[in-house]
Image 1 (cartoon, one colour):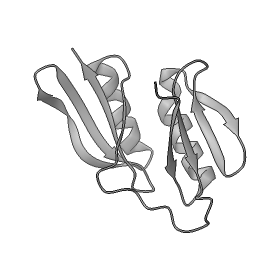
Image 2: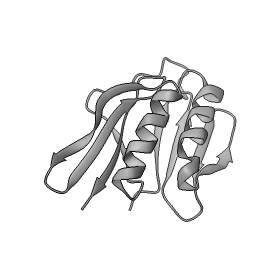
Image 3: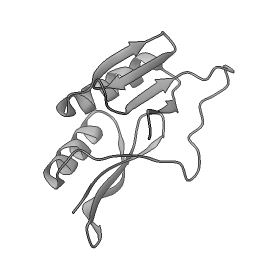
Image 4: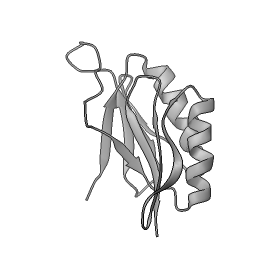
Length: 121
């Protein structure tokens, strides 16, 4: 299904450092670094990529766009949400039960991209 999701950044090194530190607890690391495009993940799994826009215009988070990552447990949702805020992310919805069987936490990265850690079950 999904191979990777790409989000824009104004500062590739800052975005790379943010996501590598945030996702290291999930076994993620830099799998590909092409300067303006960096893919982060673990071999054989979908990746999160950050890039400076090819057209050299400002990276603008899309209204309604969001990347959701399932770290495997509600405990990891809580841990990674807190870590995102420690690394400079901003709150968009504290961890909690959203509906039967769906536990989620929402934040924006330093570039304003909306992200979610979630656990179903």
